[in-house]
Structures are given as structure tokens and as C-alpha cells.
Amino acid sequence: MKTRVLLLVLLCALLASLPCSVLAFEWYHAERIYPGLSVRGVDLGGKRLEEAIVALEEGVGLSDPTIKLYGPARSWSVRPADLGLRLDIYATLTPVYNLGRERPSLSPSAPVLGPMLGSWWRNLQTHLRLLATREDLPPVFIYDEHVARLYLETLAEGINYPSTPATLSFDGINPVASPAQPGRHLNVEATLAALFPAMQQLGPAEVTLVVHEVLPAVSDAETARDEAEALLDGPLTLVLDQPREGDPGPWALSPEQLLPMLVVAESDGELHATLDQDALRFYLTRLTTTLAIEPVDARFHFDETLGRLEPISPSVEGRALDVDASLVRIAEQVPAGRRFISLTVHSVPPRYPDTATAEELGIVELVAEGDSYFIGSPSGRDHNIRLATPKFDGIVVGPGETFSFNHYLGEVTAEAGYDESYITAGEQLAIEVGGGICQVSTTAFRAAFWGGYPIDQRWYHNHRVGYYELRGAGLGMDATVYSPLVDFKFTNDRDYPLLIETQIEEGSHRLVFRFYSTADGRRVEKEGPEITEETPPGSPIYQLDEDLAPGTVIKWQSAVSGLTAVVGRRVYDADDGLFFTDVFVSKYAARRAAYHYGPGYEPPAGEE
Image 1 (cartoon, helix red, strand yellow):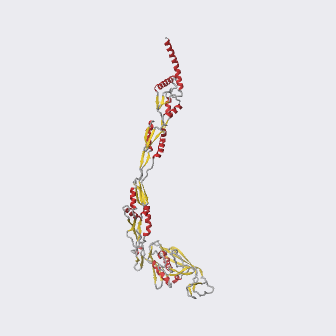
Image 2 (cartoon, one colour):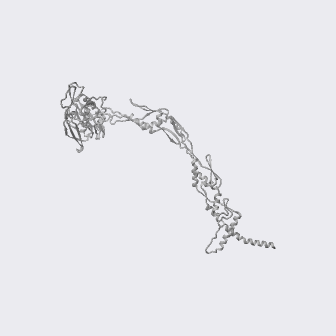
Image 3 (cartoon, one colour):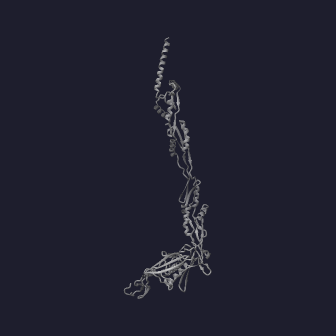
């Protein structure tokens, strides 16, 4: 009986203390995770949230090097955190903390007590279940691929290295081939794809880095070495296929000269050695002047009776180096092992071949004539006029072309056959090789003047020259030349070529220039000369000449007055309209008489 009473008392006491225990349990865990809960094996029961956070960060293993990366010749142990894996604390702990904390769903129109008791009873059941069976919830992770990519890119700096292409160098003239070396490259994107499944395992994992071999762009230089050896195997000789007498050449390019002309370039993964076309072009271009032969136009006389051209000297074809064709030939023959290669030249036809007819050229009539007289000229002057005049006989001046007297005259030297004679220079006449040539240029000027051709350059003499005033020629119709600065030039402004004929009439010592072409109806009127600024000569000059006989005196030059002569020209077209006008001004200086005397002669008192 006592025993039953005791058990009853204990049962009543237990029943009386149970609510207190439940209340105490709930009060203790009001801000704590209920017992029996864990995340990935980390016990979180009874822990406040801040304690649970510390426990999770230490217990899930994100800071442990659990991932092993295998690369070429080495490996790396990596923490998941270093690859961008981190714990989502809020998403992980929210379901853990809320487990066993169900809240009633209240409705304004429903009783409150029932739902509250129901929620309390279900929470109590959950607490008892957790105490009995425990529950392990999964963690929630965030994967930042950008962090993993940066890690791999940093890793790649120690893995990647570039490929080395095959190269060709030279030891003197000996080609040296260096083999190619492959490189390697970490494929970051492919490695990221292989790494993601290992990150999801949340445990020890092994990942092999995706590393590619990088092949060089140029894999072989042996072909280029063989080609370079062949190109430098002795001199390359350039020759003319059909050389003329006196032609230069041949031109031998030694291996040392060829070496700077070699160019090594890649094609389909291989190096090839060839001769640089630009370097060859530069070399050949320098030969163009050497090999060029200007064509020679025929010279003609016009037969006025028959109305046809008669060649007086034949035309000659010229020659020019064809640089482009020569380059093609060299490029074709050098790889075939040819060491003697003919340059390509082509002929250059003359503008006016000796087969040209009067009708073809439009040289059909006399369009102008100019003359002058050299009666009484000293033998040297006479000789020089006769030597220079034929140089202009038979010349054809093309439409729009400017005639230059000095161009056709050439060098005026004793070696060219010219004698010494008087020229106007300074106060006294001087003796120089070529004196008298101005007679020829003066006559050419007069023909161009009366032909109505534009005069581009004409110079007057320093003093008046009597020869140019013979037979009423008049002042201001002379033209002096002194190569290379002082020239006489005119332009053929007609649509047809102009033929120049020269003639010396022996009996009268008359020099004639005749122009033949197609007349365009122009007409020329001369105005003047208008004489102004006349200046008398000064007193005579006396000059000692030790080479003269003692006591003798000779007259060196006569006195001539100075003046300015202005000649105008009016050129009319076929309709008698004024085509153009021009003016030729000649300012002749006064010239004193001059006497040369030998030793012992006394000049008149008061004379220089």
C-alpha cells in the first residue's frame, strides 16, 4: 500500500514538473538552434546563430586544400575558397534555425486557441524527434566562377610559354636553320568546365588542367636553308642577250652582294628564301641609264620641186632596259639554278624615222626664212660659222616642243674643231675658241621671228656687231649665245613638226635658215627699231703688248656708239586677227676705239 502511494506521489510530482521542464527547454532554446540539428556533420544544437556561423565556417572545409590540380610536371593543392566557393550563411542557417519553430496560421474570423495549440504540439513533436533521431541538413554554397577564372589565369602565367618558330640566320654567307619549338597554353575555359563537378562534391577531388600544345606558325626552316645555299652558291651574272659594240657588262653579283638582297618569308608553315624584288628593282633601275641608248631622229631636206622629204642622215632605234620583264626572268631562272641570266631590253623607235614622208609629218611648204651675212669675217670666225651651221641642218622640232640652240650646238671646244676668233667681252674684243657662232644663233632667231614662233629666250650682244647690220638687217635683230647659261630658244606652237634647213651661199657669204611645215596663215609685222639712249664712245684705249715689234701700233677695235634698240613684233592669225605681240629690247654699250702698241711707242698725250 505504501509502495503504491509512493509511486503515485512520484507520478504526480513528475506530472507536475513536466510542464516546467518543457517551459525551461523552450526558454533555453528561444534564440538557439534546437538539439539534434547539424549541417554537413557540424553539430549546431544549442548554438546561437553567431556561434553556428563560426562553427560552420570552421567545419565545412572550405579553407582546407581539398582539391588537387594536376598540370605539366607538377601539381597544386587548392582550397575551394580560393576557387570562388563560399558558404551562403543565410540560406544555410535559415532552415536549420526555423526547424521546430512553426508559427500558427491565424485568420481574423477563426478562433485563435486551436491553431496555436496545434502549432505548439507539432513543434513539441519535432523537438522530441530531433532528440531521438537527429537531422543533418545540407549546406548552401555560392560559386563565383570569376574568382576561379582569375586563379587559373594567374596559374597560367607559370604554365604558358610561347612557341618558337623555325628561323633562318646567316653566319657570313652560310645559312643556319634553327628548329621550331612548340609552346603550351592553359585552356582556362575548358579547365573551368572540368573543375565545376569537383567543386560540387565538397570533398577531396583531383582535376587535370586542360593544357594545349601550341604549334609554331613556322615549323620548318630547312627548305629555306637549302634555297639560300643555292642562291649564294657563287655569283649571279647578268648579261645582255645581244650586246652592241662598246656596251657595258656583264654584271656579276657576288654572294656577298646577293646576301642583302635575300628575303626570307613564311608560306604554309615553311620558310622560303628568295631574292627581294624591290632590292633587285633598285639594282636594275641603276642600270637603266647605263644601258639606255636614245633613239636618233632622221634629218631631212625638203625638196620643194617634188614636195617630198629626202633623208640626209638615217634614223637609229634606241634601247631601254625593261626592268619589269628582267625581274620576271630572274625570278623564273634563279630557282632553276641558272647563274647567267640575260636582261630584257626593248627597242625605242625614233620619233621621226627616215621612212617618214612629208604628208605623214605635215612638212609640206616653206613657212619662214631668216638670213645674215658674214662678209669679211676673219678666217677663224668664218671656220666656226661653217662648222656650227650644219649642226642645225635637217632638225625636226615636234609640235609643242621648245628648240634650244645650245642643245644641238654641243660643246664649243678646240677638241670639237673650233678655232679662236673675236668675241665681245668687256671693253675690248677678246679672242676665244668659238668666236662667230653667234652669227648662226642670230640667223636662227631671225627665222623664228619672221615665222611668228614664240621666242622663249633671246639675249642681245654687249656691243653692236657690224656683221649683224649688213645688207639692211637693222639694229636689234641679233641673238648671242654662250653655253650653258646664255641660250636661244623658241617653241613650235603649230600642230605640225617643223623642219630646219641651213645653207651657206658661198659667193655672198650669206647664211640662211629655212623653216618647213604646214602654214597656218599667220602673218608677221615688224615695228622699229626705235633708237633711244644713244651714248658716244669715250677716248681711245692704248694698251702695251710686249709681243708686238718695238715702236709699232695696231688698231685693235673701232669705236662704236651705245644705244637702246627696241623692236616690236605683231603676229596676226589666218583671219588677220591679232594673235600676239612681243618686244625685243637690246641695250648696246658704247665701245671705245682700242690700240695695241709695242715697246718704245709713245701713245698720244692724254690717251689711256
